[in-house]
Amino acid sequence: MRTVSVNIKEHPYKILIDQHLLMGVGLELARYAKSGTKVALFTSKTVKKLYLERVVRSLKTSGYNVESFVLPSGEGEKKLKTVSEMYDVLIENEFDRSSFIIALGGGIVGDISGFIASSLYRGIPFIQIPTTLLSQVDSSVGGKVGVNHNAGKNLIGAFYQPKTVLIDPRVLKTLDPRELICGYGEILKYGFIKDLSFLELCINSKNIILDLKDIELVSDIIQRSVEIKAEIVAEDEKESGKRMVLNFGHTIGHAIEKSCGFGKFLHGETVILGMIAALKLSVVESGLDPQKANWAIGKLKEIKLGSKLENLDIEMALSAVRHDKKVRDGELNFVLLKDIASPVVVKGIELEKVREILIWLKNEVD
Ligand SMILES: NC(=O)c1ccc[n+]([C@@H]2O[C@H](COP(=O)([O-])OP(=O)(O)OC[C@H]3O[C@@H](n4cnc5c(N)ncnc54)[C@H](O)[C@@H]3O)[C@@H](O)[C@H]2O)c1
Ligand SMILES: [Zn+2]
Image 1: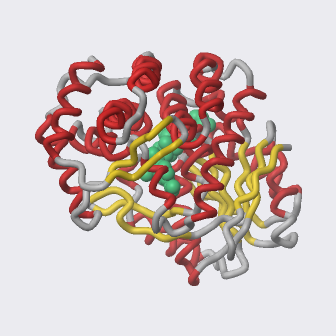
Image 2 (image 1 turned 180 degrees about the vertical axis):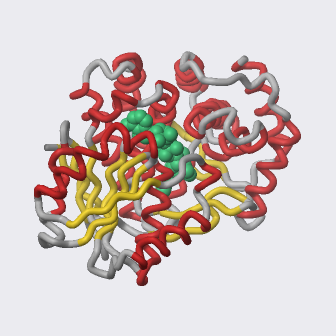
């Protein structure tokens, strides 16, 4: 069993990574809750068919009183209405402050369930069992939970740490290949901001990771990703400064995601595009060696994305960047690299520069 400690001062917890961990959920819960405790198990329709049964069995075998609930799927359902309906169901079914919430699914299930856990009765204990690569290496770690608002993604939420995170890399076998690429994009991000040899390993093992050919190696890579995220989050739980480096590739990534319409590109795919842009920008703005930038850009361009940039509307993307800037106190802050594994937050980048980069990106990637 691999273990990663998340050393957040008030709420330290452990992330466990192991094949077949789904079958041991009951035993893991026994560290935190006595037999007979009521457990609300949230999942999605797809994950229910694939994995719910074995998790329920494990919980029942350990004596837990488990009820499962299917959350509606898709980014559009990650909203307060879903949360509110679930409050009704949980209260009606007499879940109380000593009950547990378990999220079994991707980032959407994790974010919604975590938000319910953070707010119902001012907080009830919560466990994450992430089942997509992106949720295993990113969204389940660090305690950000929440839902979307009509005005934008993730505008409503909280910082609420789980009791533990249980990662079973075997479940990735049923994941859509595009979803694997999304997780891979975030994994590369950790390499870029923190660890050159890890970056090289992930780039050189691209096919092994994306084809899940070696589950031990994939487990190693999940472990290192989670270690990097945990380290950064432990230093800055509430995102007041250091945690910003996790946004590498995300400013332009978000702008592409928004301007192309949510759904055309998946989040992790736009992060890959955003990292290509950030690498290029790093050469002029933060002194990244052009040879290193070109090497990395070449490797990122080899990743096959599910959509093309040909219809990118540069002005719409710029307006999304401008909106981002407004949200962040009028400063356009970019996470760039001085070197690989040496990130820097550069303030006050001109919008004109961003326009140039977007035009370059559109020509470069298509
Ligand atoms: N809280 C955070 O820190 C944080 C960080 C990054 C992203 N997020 C959020 O995460 C969400 C995206 O999460 P995601 O990428 O996991 O997408 P997702 O939750 O939509 O899952 C993708 C799809 O895969 C299915 N699925 C899940 N596990 C599966 C499996 N093992 N086999 C087959 N199908 C499976 C799901 O049912 C869903 O249809 C976004 O809402 C984003 O805002 C949150
Ligand atoms: Zn991301």
